[in-house]
Image 1 (tube, rainbow, N blue to C red):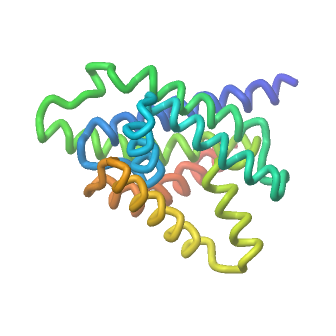
Image 2 (cartoon, rainbow, N blue to C red):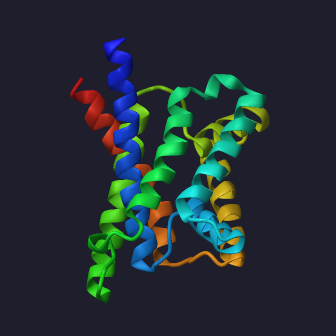
Image 3 (cartoon, rainbow, N blue to C red):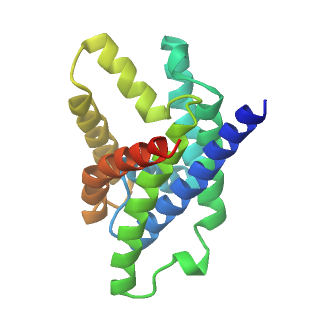
Length: 196
């Protein structure tokens, strides 16, 4: 039981790190990661806070994944979906996370990319269920036999284009996120698993 509680706390801590990274991404003005571009655009259209929209979108995707193949969903999937959005709402207007100059925006973007990747890595080490996009990606891979990297590229492209047309910010940050988040997540996972 103690180990289970520890793993849930790891999920929540990972969500906090992810939420901080996403806020830095968005506040940099250089565009967020593909899912955040979509969430940001949708938030502008339906007039809800970004974190709340992130919760709705993630839980909706998790529900679809659960209906298709529940093996990809765990308690961590749900906790992560709820708490990442909660932390985004709590942190989005924190002055310290709002860069006041072009130089600080670049620094914020770089830190945001790292924190998002590290946060995902921390969350995944708990092994309490996949994230919404990861679960969807795995199901599409199992059903279509298309390579995971191509499925991820298609998902990210659809999210980015849709989000952009809804009013989300697309920019160099979106490209940086797409290129760097995966490797940073992988590095974090290997580092943390190596310490266990």
